Length: 267
Image (cartoon, rainbow, N blue to C red; front, side, top):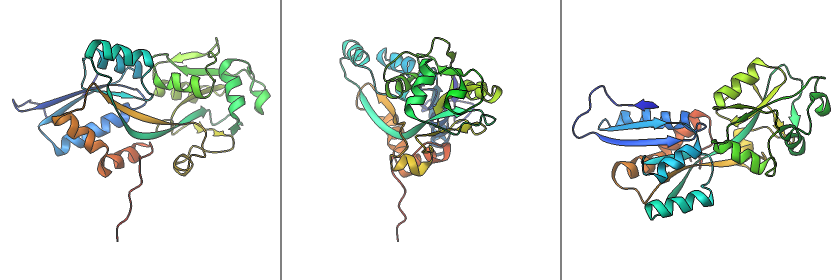
């Protein structure tokens, strides 16, 4: 758990917010918490990762105030929330993200089609030579099933086909990036905010740039969410409202994700 606190000592008036969920969103949640507590010193925000599935489970059990998730809630999760809390939950779109495909910079491959990507991650294509690379085996690196990114990639890239049996599972996006950095034959995936030292492969000849995500030309785009059990009040509502404000969305851009809207210059 990462504990973000505005100070060393808690006052009796301190207001607490506990968040948990997506590892993809962890750097964003941490930055939001830091910026918010600079302005509101009577608020302490606990930021915890673990994956979207664990965050949603904690929300269902009423263990947290806010769940951060890189996917929508599954029908079974909504049913569990309704059964336990008599609520269907409230979802907030808070940012846009392109799902990048990471390749080692020594790998000569620059572009992959969606079909090639599916063939690689399902294990049908096992050698880089097949997609224009060197004659060497492909090492597939994947997130764990607790990850919303794992499910999104399986649904939207693999068309719900199973991942390769040879895929190496990593718990966080940073671990995937490090694995790709250390192995020329590796390929992985994750948010665009990660992986400065690896190549973000073009997909269908389109790079995951800010412009290409905003105009929807990049083919693997998703939204990032915050969830609450019910309509929030008090400090929870104030924090979410701030995250959706121009100031909060500026943090989204600074971290490396895509704001929901562009800041317009007024005359």
